[in-house]
Length: 608
Image (cartoon, rainbow, N blue to C red; front, side, top):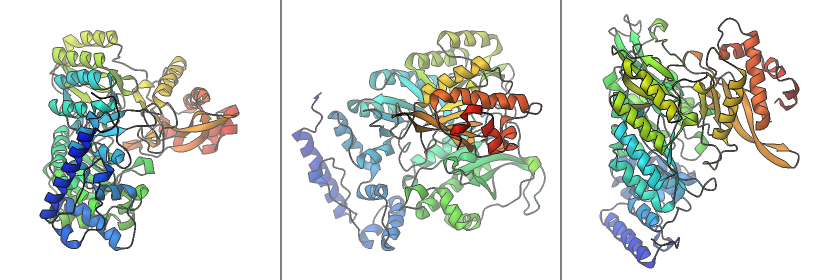
């Protein structure tokens, strides 16, 4: 393979011919010309196509195209990402990506954005490499898949795998010439990356204990998988103005964080007929919309109650309404929340009903029908399943990263002592289900031998960190490294009797959801003498579910070397002054910002 990081003349000629032939075929059929060429000499601009050409687009593509055209007809300007999608359909880049990979080249210009639709993120300047995000619906995968992922990571990536906050997996440190090896390799493992980045619906999450939890109302992983395949087989699901999240929560012990999603389906058990409409007692899903905690908002109840077999079609209709009406001029406003803010919930639901061609079931949920089963430590350690004699083991993965050898070791444990299944969680760890009681000690011993753990201090149990500056161009700090340093410092000082969730995120995109952490750390740069050092804005009092709340900014611009002591002082203040077994979020909520700042003593000079 050539080390000359440019296309050969033969490759350029192929691209030119490929683009020309594609454009001719589209023109003959009356479709707009969309060039896929990576060569400037063969690039053809789409511009403002006629209404006649737009009408001849396939219906799925037409929905987004017409939404863009309305913006232009109103005399407004599309944002650069919308213009890029209008010039080139990102779903039709396979041959272009192959040629680029063969040439050992990374994408340039808007192709960096468009290639994210295939799960490939060129992460320069943080690293001169790709990150590849997968789609693991419901977080459920088989041991043979994890073993294959380990082998593929050693051949074509960095030799490790990251677990994300959407119960998903990512590769990092992928060289330019390995891009297509990754995409082909994933498909050979029955794993899809299409739509895992860019303006698409992200990995569909579910309760990780689906089918195992004695407390759950209903299994949700099957629904997440159905939603996954619905997305893959409806091209209009790829025409969004911005990313989108969907979660199914079965009301069990481990939350799917459905209230942080654009669409949340939360299981409820209606025990009596509702006052607003006759609804037979049974298990339903409460529909919530508009969660985006990075913008300080949770999903809110819509008053719509769905049976399980209605959820997928309703989600599809919601997405299509968003495709038609989401903001395509301002990326900061291009999320479902802002359509809901402008329209109100009733108008939006009416549009969804129109899309479906039927009215949705409305009803008020009695508070006693809402499940309250969450156990904030249920994703760590050994716990009994509802199947007699079987247990699952929640494995601690330090800041969500495992080596290829550890991935193979976990696969072996799942096959030898379980049923060959692994479950990922939104807390950046995984579960080994269906372990017999007689085998628990063997699993524990094996985990320790491979450098992992089956129990955790309450600090590590709730420790979440995004990729950080080492792998993200937006991050202002080394979040994963800092998370480990912070955990070690706090464990040396405290033996907590209940979890305190600490979320470290490197930038305003809030991939680690710092606003819902008991303690949320947002990366920033801090001036020290003539240098700029890594630091954090410190937020306190976030939560989800029954303890829902957006963390408040209490300390601004704290250099990281001061953060462990500051956080320790805050925790000590909580332990010294809480009422019996009072949760951290409750404690923070009854103290003013000034009261919380004062606990840091000499740190108050940094207070916001």
